[in-house]
Image (cartoon, rainbow, N blue to C red; front, side, top):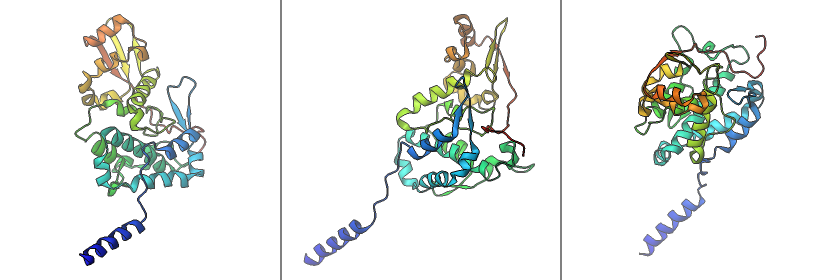
Length: 271
């Protein structure tokens, strides 16, 4: 018994001597600090631009944040709540996108310049996450949209593709505690932007929307389809009661607008 007791004491002392793994910050404070410094809303609060030069000057901070994400073991991630995983993946996608742009900035006009005829910037595996090297498509379509819990298409207004046509990069990190309110706010801001989403009164009512609603139309089926989803955001679209009723009855002509892939740079310049 004495030997067994000594063995357990040795095990306890060894464990006590090992450095404890730092608790993951689900508030994503480090990312919020960077976003507040380098993301700027337009006057209407419907779109944002990114100071990539500022991110480049402080690239160590961005790299450090991404390393904290990469250090999360898959077993820990699998124990998190779905909102915690959603916030983690959205932030990972957005931070990795900024890092990818910086690999060639300022010698690019669009994130598409990082691809080619037979390659895509979204399919390039470059970010270590949850035990393997991931592409942006892996994060968005595999881990986020591919999860069995996925039901909320509002994530399309949260992930940012570094383009003017994309919904705004938010000037704060997404967190599980505020996720629903943040996703609703992102959606409202995007739908208020008349350069990307608008109603045309007439018979029939014409709804002109971002191509995002076309590309991911199936995702909106969980909320009654695109027209019903837009009707739920009538205030943001500037729709009156009659127009909302038409949308809910699917009595509207739907048209998708061209997407602007230009870089969402705060200070565009000659390259």
